[in-house]
Image (tube, rainbow, N blue to C red):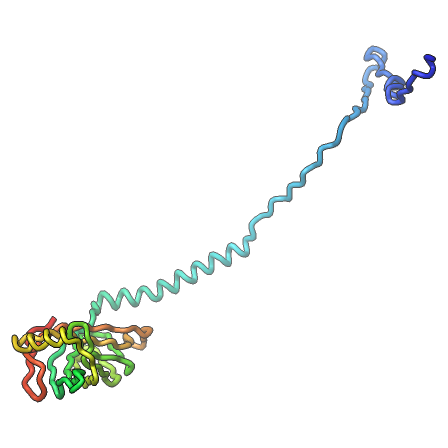
Length: 242
């Protein structure tokens, strides 16, 4: 029964049948014996590393030229602006409300206010080389205690340097609702001869220096003034202005 239990192992027999390396003493001088090694298990996969690419000198040069061009453009703009600033020393034109005339100012039967004023606004531009274009899409309003009494506008015009212009502006308001408490305060201030008003002007404008014109900006004027009264066809005086 021993024959039935026998197992044949080819791999073991193959390993045993491999010739043994000859002894070093049996080899002639100058002879080398190489024996292949049997690797067991799976081989580890190799990893491919892409070659390092050198930077593109052409794109780097183009980028440097772009930065240089932007720098030169800024320098070209900055030098004239700096020269203009130090030579001319520009400043904002000055605006003052010189006169306010009252054509109408009364409360109707439904207690709504009807008002019509004539304003004289003085604009002083004392700059040496800077002019101002005032656009026609402007708005002028007269307010009392934050409430608009009347509104209007003035015509477009150009104000040159070293120039003083008096603007005649007509403003009107009708059916303006005034709360009873606000009307009582107005009557009390009329009796005291101190009526506080605010003249608000919002005007789109462009600045001109030589041949250069700025983009359109919105100039905002807020002039606080005190008058002695608000009465039609009477001498209204400005007693205080800020």
